[in-house]
Image (cartoon, rainbow, N blue to C red; front, side):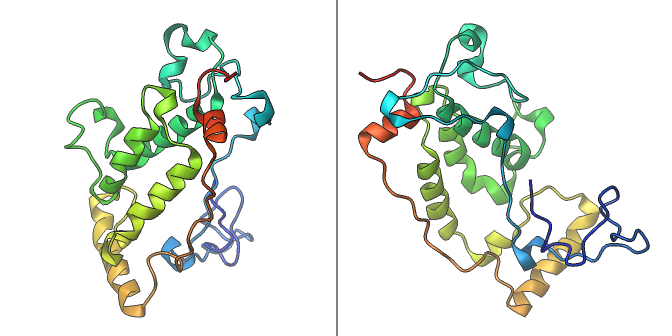
Length: 215
């Protein structure tokens, strides 16, 4: 879910979003590079609250749209498991199938050929987020730290490359926007602010990663 407030300064029609609220004119909009909108990944319908005092949580499996987590396959969907590593898998798999690889239909064939070049740098992180063994996946804090570290190594030009797949006819226009933004001094990303991630104690890390309750 993306907050469109900054993207459409004058608002847009709720049914035909390319039109303004009055439905008389096309909606005025700017690019994401110019305003850096916030994107949210949510699923409040399945939210739970867990207390660390009871040890790693063990919840019955609720199979959603993505039915590919290894711990949910076969008889695994009948066995309670820690939902936190599964959430990490869902996020990693979403990035893998909708951003990092060019064509979902070819996902299992010639993966290197279909790797989306601008987001190639995410491949090692996504690999760890989708490990078959849930206990080997990073926590969300570790994901943030690794993402921050790898993006800081990228040049301004790399950060401006499109994260989505454009039709061949749209590429020249996108390239022109990149050059114009560079000439205007528009930053590729907001001014850097170090993430405030507090390292977890061994007990808390076990709470977020372990498959079985600790004694």
